[in-house]
Image 1: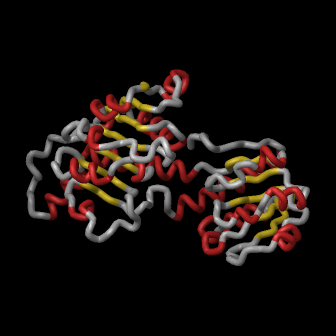
Image 2: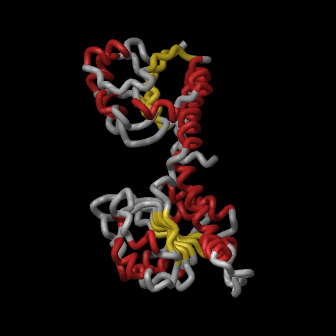
Image 3: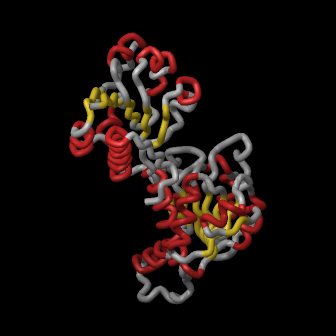
Amino acid sequence: MKRVYVHRLADWYDLYMDGANEALLASFAEVVSEGSRAEPFGEDELIQRMKGANIILSLNGMGTKEITENVLKKTGTVELICISHWWEQFADAEKNTGIRVIEGSNCNTVAVAEWTVCAALMGIRKLSGFDAKLKAGSVWCEPRRTVGLLCESTVGLVALGRIGRYVAKYMRSLGARVIACDKLATEKDAAELDIELAGMDDVFKKSDVISLHLPVLPSTKGLIGAEHFAKIKDGAVFINSSRAAVYDENALVAELQKGRFDAYLDVFSVEPLPLDHPFRRMTNVLITPHLAGDNIAMFRRCGREAILTIKEYCETGRIVDRKFMFP
């Protein structure tokens, strides 16, 4: 049996590793686990704990900096590092040590993409608005036949990274037309996703639903400003499940205060969202507390998929990277 070292994650451990996941891993591998241990190891102690390990199961990025390249080299037996929840740890390990580093689960990406699709459907069908009107005493919420259909809508995506690609597939499967702006995307990418590439201005002007999927980089911080928000159609839906740093939040507040379109936001420039923030009082804004990719089912599935990835490697030698594996 291969020996699998499960790296410590303090109180995060139980999120990923319930009894079922622990039993699954133990069914095919010899397991060395730190469980919910919080204290860091010294280098010599860590090397001793990892002695004979063939595989590292990294549940996420918490604490993995202690598994240095020197530790990996001195351990000497590690063949594979399988990550269940990608936080870009071990980024240089494969290049510098020759140890294969793969992503064993893609469920966090799936979770954020699901939240985005949910927001788009709620926004296009104006469910929050009807709920508020009914609770305020309206009988039939007239005029009631002003909402649209996602399958008759144009969805505009800003960036086609991991989550953006998933959202594109989900939206296309529901019949929406999808346009996207991404300087790195090619016509081949567009053909594979069955979408159209467009410029940023066209995404903001022509879309019924606009969804942001930008990472925070020096080139993307503050990229979107008042001039972009002013181009959004009346009645459109603006969604952000990436990071608030990619736009001017004050400019977004100012445009939303005009009541022209709705916003579904999971991330904010200050978190937790201050109690006096305008978003908390705006009827055309639905807010959630940075939970698009954070729920117990996601953690459990991340753990399970990574274990199944390791199981396949142990039994067949095949290494499957699930980074873009559509469920």
